[in-house]
Length: 81
Image (cartoon, rainbow, N blue to C red; front, side):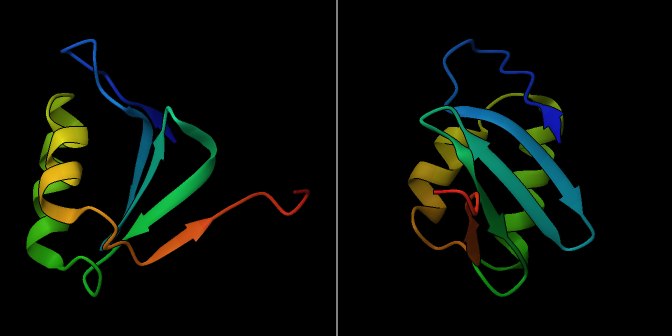
């Protein structure tokens, strides 16, 4: 995972990783969970925009909140819970 640059200083995103057509995101409010986004959910157009925002380090959390919300493909959580 790469630390999110958070150029605004107020992002809810902690880290991200791009793997092909999938993107993994960790949010500050839930640092033990990894949200998975892909071409199926929320769709290629959204994932491509999310990748650009992640690399730029600005706007990813807002984009997810406004355009994607709960439309993620999977939520990975630690097995020890």
